Image (cartoon, rainbow, N blue to C red; front, side, top):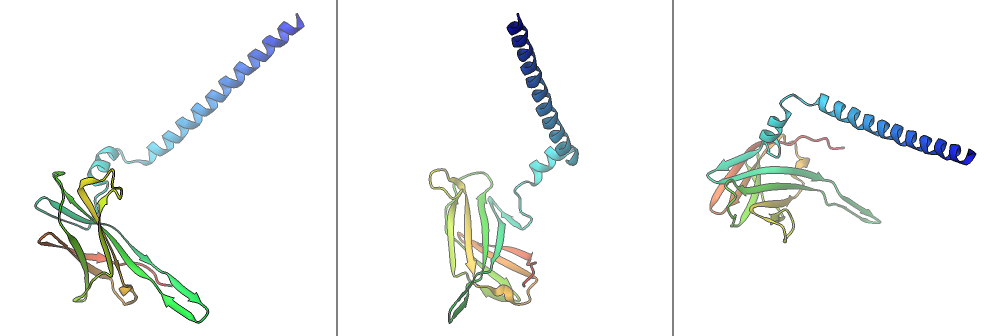
Length: 181
């Protein structure tokens, strides 16, 4: 008889433990979703469809859209014994795509311009997007270019000239904002 009561007592306690654990987890999930949803604007779904993934620095001509995904200023110094070298660079990643999702073919290269001076990259590559041969999209490519560190001069804006096929696309007045230490 005592064993039966003891067994029932343990079963009831285990059941209560599971119920309380479930309530605790359910409460935490709802609390997190409420705090995330309360910070979003009421027309969030509409805004995300309009603005997500679109650069403010873009040119659309005909069926081709060219925009800047990102640019990086890479600071890299070599200091070893008697050798000191500055290998810093300015990298830019440009998206080239067709708006109607048709196949994109052709060569592309870019040139930077500031204060009337044009700079060619010392390395550039036109690659499929995403950067995977097996799953690439045929309507979108990325142009990756690496430039010498012209940013050591006092420059606030620059232009990017992208040559794709036989056309020239100019992305104008791109701000160059950063702090050099």
